[in-house]
Image 1 (tube, rainbow, N blue to C red):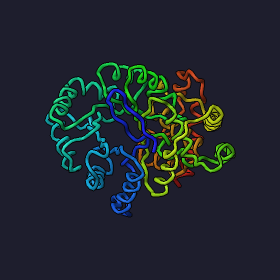
Image 2: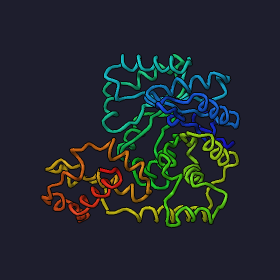
Image 3: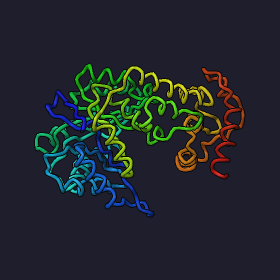
Image 4: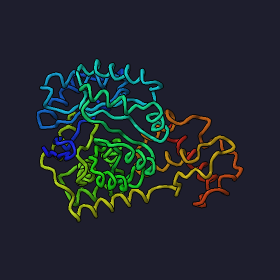
Length: 378
């Protein structure tokens, strides 16, 4: 197993981290504990030492199952990470109650890595207004947490503000070869390295989208260069090739995924220059499949008819990039309110007058609505 040293903390962690947000589930949606524990056993005995969960994962059951699994091993033989859901915190009393509930769920006296969960501009203001970091420092002084960090979902400017506003022990960002220019971006990777703040990476396989690439010979580009390697392994090696990345989280749902990830990290090989060129070609090919050039700038908003134009285009473009109907169907039916869908467009043209990309928005909204109707059977 590959290990990386967090120089500022004086510890080493396994480069592969076990993400506990996608445990195998039963027909009723509950965690299949027998399978989950077997997967954690396999990873632990192969040398994985970093296990990441959070308060809301699996509707609160992830912390329970993770704690149960890790209770079978010596406490000093692994690192446990969980997160404070800032969106549920209105007072410090809320933070105190949630943290104690987390310790109870985990059956632990302390947490190694404690994160402010999914920080963005708004939640960062909550952290500052309530002085949550001072509360966390009290937890550290009491021996209830060891290292303090945050996970992040917003733009680079917000990341820079947060990262430079406090002496963080570590930070966690979303990064993969398709999203290197979104959220914290590669600029964020460089900033963290400059400040000596080690990075934990989430979504290296983009929620599984980079594990099964679409047709038209895209995955064959990988196979030609490395016949025995899975598409997932390329995505994992991409993020693991940054020297300030100390943990690459993978949310594993099957033993097959555990075995594939272990094969990648047991004898980890950073990408060669030739392999980087292959990844760039794959990324360029995937990006070329987008249907329009919407950048999400939101100059077209608000729409007089209530359509969330950038969100509609994001779902549509994601579908064409990855050809994942299940993902598109879920996004369109479960995450997109009917009142904000493209079908509500009245073709007034106000959006097109404001669009700096000169997109034929009205025409594209009609096209995407028809495609989503076909996918969802509506």
